[in-house]
Structure formats: C-alpha cells, structure tokens
Image (cartoon, rainbow, N blue to C red; front, side, top):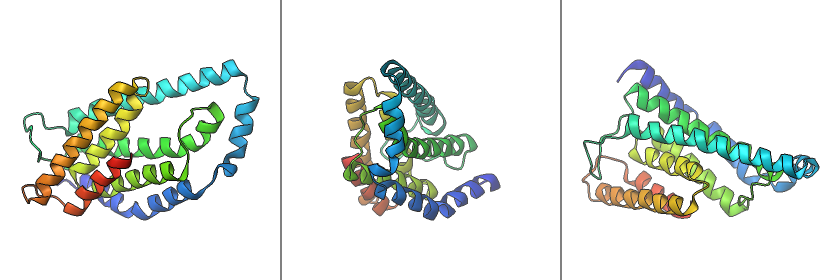
Length: 211
C-alpha cells in the first residue's frame, strides 16, 4: 500500500472521535437552536424561497449523482459479480472519491439543520431521524477506516437517496436493492466466506434497516 493511502486511512481513524463529537452535537441540538433559520425563512418571499429550495435540491442531487457514479467506476469491481468482491481502498482514485463522498454526506447532514427550516425542505428532523442519520454516518466513517466494503454500500445508499430525491419510487427500489446486497454480504461474512469484520457487517445491516 502506498504511503499517501496509508496516511489517508490513518486520518480516518484519527478523525473518528471528532466526528463522533460533531454528530453528538447534531443529534442533541434541538430545533430552538436554529430559530434564526426559521426567522430568515419566514422573511423570504415565497417565490424566492421556492427558487432557493429548488436550486438547493438540484445542486445537491447533481453533486450526489457525480459522486455516486464515480464510486461505481473507481471502486466497483464489475468483473467480480459476487457477494465478496475485492475492495479497492488501496487505489488512489477509489480512496479519493470515498473520502469526498464521506465529506459530502457529513457536510450536507450538518448544513441541512439550517437549510431545512430556512428553505422549507420538509425533511424529518425528530430525534429518531437524527439518531439514525448520525449512526449511519458514524458507521460509514469506521468502516472506511477499517477498509470494509460496508463503507461503500453506506455511501452508495446515502448518495443514491440524494440523487433520486425527485424520483421517490425509483429511490425506494434502488435502496432496497442495496440493502438486500448488504444482507447477502453479511451472511457470507458470518459463514466465513468473506474476509471481513462480522460486527461491522451486522451493524451496517442494522443501520440500513432504519435509514
């Protein structure tokens, strides 16, 4: 493994505690903390608010589409259509897009605590929804640090949902496909047919069930 790749993976391991702290703040900060966002949103004219909301959704969906497509291209093994494909974390292109995808998911998760009330995105913001999203992202960070395929599956699920935000039926079918593959992958790990960490595979399936 090349030294830059080692440093990047080491950085993921070292950044687990700070990410956990940020996600803890994300979960336990109530809606009243973002009162300014509600005030700004109410002062925006309806047409301006709708325009900004549409632009935000289209821009995040486009970025997610680019990331999702490149994840398949750089990290997918199209010649190994099995439940235990080889991971490509040691390759620069795969690790680069994996890192970019993780940062994108984390940034949008935190930013939307402001944009959701300000632009009226109507996304669920309850404690349960925040805990599920934070747990999924935290697990993604850990699985990437341990070079597990589950990290890529979680990133594909996150980016697919943003990409297909305007096509909910397609998004549901695609998400179910990713979840089913994660279950098959977990079963292969638990039966010792895949060289991976069983605890992380089980945790990934559990997280996907509530995402």
